[in-house]
Image: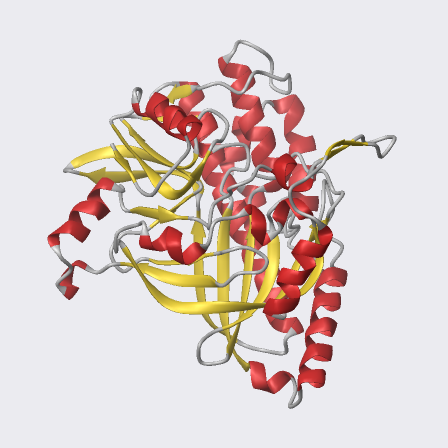
Length: 409
């Protein structure tokens, strides 16, 4: 068992509970409390997969595209640059669908993607299959709400990047909920408690979950790449490099000479030289990383840490405030403040002004104040990853502050 960084007692207790059922486990430095398994947790099993470990937002992840355009191409003066970035933010907001249950409004939405012909759809109970297919077609390429975003960045050389963060939307949520219900002896579609469910992959139920989880992974990859490339087109740019990772998923991997099922919940795969994109917050830098290469003469301590991390790293900066702590709690119907938040609009917007970030949407629960600082989190990973590029946020587009989304991670 390996714990990177410092965590509160509830997070550590939740991690130790998961570890008691796993072959091996690790907790990344951005960890915090989740459903059963902490966000930032990694757990390895023998021919078993954890439904709540993978989570409701199956295959949530990050994608980043380096373009051939430079920040300097957007304007020669500060005013021109600011106007160009505001225009880009507005166009992203008009073009990409954000928020709960939204349909992809674009004329070229990928509704005929080949994944809709995958045999894995047969694992969905017949009477629910068509409704789920319809929902999945409509939502492919939509971003959702919560901490999901579309960003435009510039790197240390002034090159423009597009970054996105979201998962498999209502499709993944329905799959996770369905298998929690089935394992509890309830029919697909009926609510079941969020508790640990380890499915045996040699049993029909485990086999079917694995097929649909894998399909949700393809779905999330297709959606993120469609959105990111849409924004590249808005920039009038060409794609030069794509970095793409899930961080809520399960993989079949070999560790210590043994084949294991490795569940990562809010953790990025980071095998030697494997690239990854890790976001900070709406007002902080993001990074492009790679797993530290063994052949670079990495010290033994780094190689040991990589193995202990099950070749994983952080997926973001990690929360230090819950959504309610940050934004407070307001009665949905009356608007009465039930609990004041620790972050005010003035605090958030002052931070963004200092960082020169153009924001569309977003809420106080996503303010930079609610997150750790990414450099400190990466340092706590003990050299297991190397930073290739540091990305400064220019434009951040998210769902509006009042959007409720049951499909967020």
